[in-house]
Image 1 (spheres, rainbow, N blue to C red):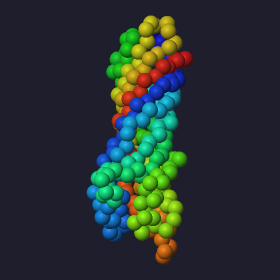
Image 2: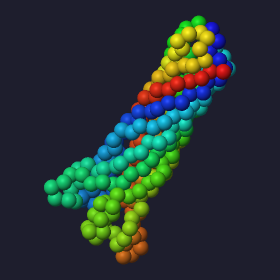
Image 3: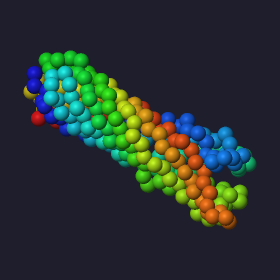
Image 4: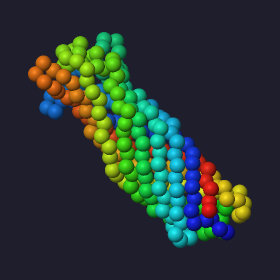
Length: 221
């Protein structure tokens, strides 16, 4: 059975990020209203595209790009507003490019070919904006004298996946794919704001570390 030397896939991704980040804090002292805060981030949907090269029957090299994930960030356990425990921090988008070496467990005579893979990922965080509500808190509490800025960096780290390619017949060039991914991604988060003496900042170590479920359709050639 000819599985093809190259496969191009497109599909969708369901992303569940880690939201157990540290609280926003100053370099030395924390502000009391932010002392026990934790990040709260919902799941997201995105699109993904991948290309696979199979140089040998049981091995493949895969390059994947996932983009379009859009997140709103809230701070839980916030004590700065009486009667509330949450305040909106901001929003951002994330894209990830991943490279895997995959091992296929079954030979080419099987209609379904499960595989596992390991590799690296580069994740970029962009379109980062601070919530106006949080900026108003900084001003009203006397921390800031004007508009603050919310910034996230980027990251490189390892990634793993497990998936399966499936064809309905030996002659069909179309394939279905399902996979589960996990990768590490952490970056510095900073809120920089003007003060009467210049500038100050809050910071956190943001652990993105998502679980991702991919569903896609592939074409082999």
